[in-house]
Length: 441
Picture 1 (cartoon, one colour):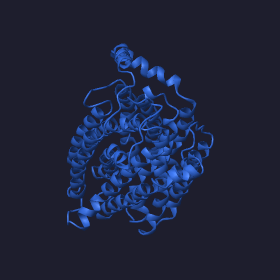
Picture 2 (picture 1 turned 135 degrees about the horizontal axis):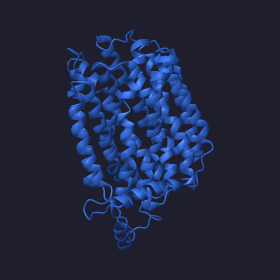
Picture 3 (picture 1 turned 180 degrees about the vertical axis):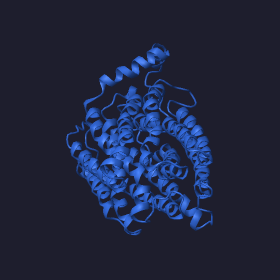
Picture 4 (picture 1 turned 90 degrees about the vertical axis):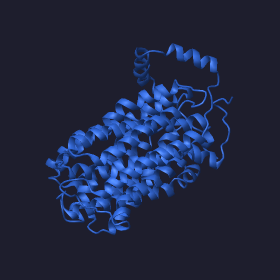
């Protein structure tokens, strides 16, 4: 039995197996990000209210993440381990939601399915973050999160491109007939459901988990923690004991994810107007813009997959703080530059910078955080940490629609610029983060 202070060094393929499930998780997440606004608009959503309809996703995360983290910390099964039961159950329900989403016949139904989909994604995704802290020592943690980022990137690339692949290479209709969701989107979500389940099963069946150092003590703690009331008390009490590094990173995450959420919500509308010259969600041009945004998102995801293995090298020669600051700054400037984009080919260039930022967002904060957390509460605190992802999304959902309509006079591209400014603020705040882990060599 291995102590959390000295864990076995894993091979490349062991890192591959334990991270492969993230390929499927991000496949579902990318389909959601690239197509949800398109689906809402096709079903009649007012562009000014898009951010409100998206609220289902972050509210679900706010409720689910710390609970799942706490439960996974206090789970151990001789065969399934600690985190893998949650991988499997989340994947099962997410796959069902992916099959249901393109059959939404009304706006309220698509919002309800988004709620189910995002909740299920959170159930399988959050334990994956704790999985790295469970299995890897400090010298491999950045590499572990980088491997996850690699699969996140490639999962998102393929998922984002699927509607375009179906339309351009397989001859599937990309038009909305009588207000229905286009066939390209439907088939993409079917493929996503199958891939999500298959990839997570790969990790469940091939990756092993380290048992608790002291099984007797673990079982005793399980008995003490039994009961819903005790669980709620423990979950709430943990907020007051957050490590200093986690509090500092929370501010960074807040501004980072306002920028990302603005991008996911408003890129379809902004590119539709600035590049394709339309805001009519039923038009062929708007649906073409939706597919093009999928390609743009594939570009940033592909760049992130490639950057995932460069960033740890940069961090070793500088620091994780410097690396994250630099990447966020590049991402912020790139988002701001979208206001100047009026050409299809030029629209890909800012996505390169966003991809560099995305690679760091998925790697560096978690690597810094993992070294500051108590091992037996790794899942819980990773779940709490994601509060600082969903809270800015909720703030964005409540305010961005108002800002876009009344301050920016409906110019969605200005909301993207605001997102870029928020990312620059996050870059500055990263400089104040305390990273206690020894440099990786």
